[in-house]
Length: 170
Ligand code: AR6
Image (cartoon, rainbow, N blue to C red; front, side, top):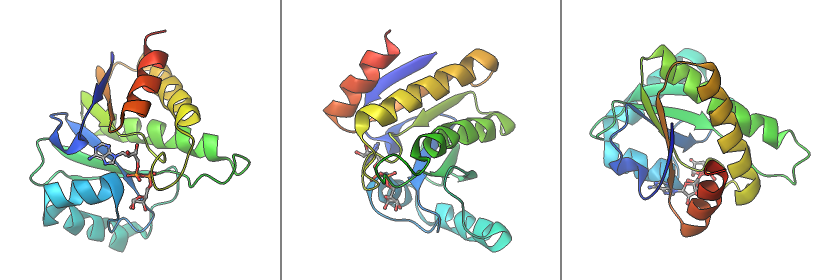
């Protein structure tokens, strides 16, 4: 099932929450900053280990770490595309963020996963187009996999909340 809520993802009790990170995996502003602040240094420590092992995280890919002090068990860090007008494969890259995050959640036995609205803040992806991709990709995944059983879209602002909500209830 898909649930849509308005709020702060750092407060959500899901098996995994997803972070809208950047390729460095070393933190930033927006939801990334909030997750590292609330989760504490254990998350950054894991991110550094991943970087040492594989280097940067490519756009559309995802990696998993501890959730530190957060109520979630894991944080899945995915790197959304920067909006560049739409002709730079942004849509495919954004869909990959959702798909790869869900695959990683399944590999780690996560039954509940919470997503922020990836790329729609600092990276400038138009909210309506991003929402359509998010809802379509998650819906397809849930239809073709047994797990996770619940995906929550955690919307920080009223606009994103009403856009996602209208797409999910069709
Ligand atoms: N809980 C849920 N959603 C949030 C929260 C929160 N606590 N805080 C912000 N949002 P953004 P991006 C929403 O900018 O566009 C960082 O510097 C926000 O309103 O966090 O993918 C990274 O390091 C928006 O709807 O991520 C990267 O450099 C959504 O989260 C860059 O920003 C995503 O906004 C990534 O940019």
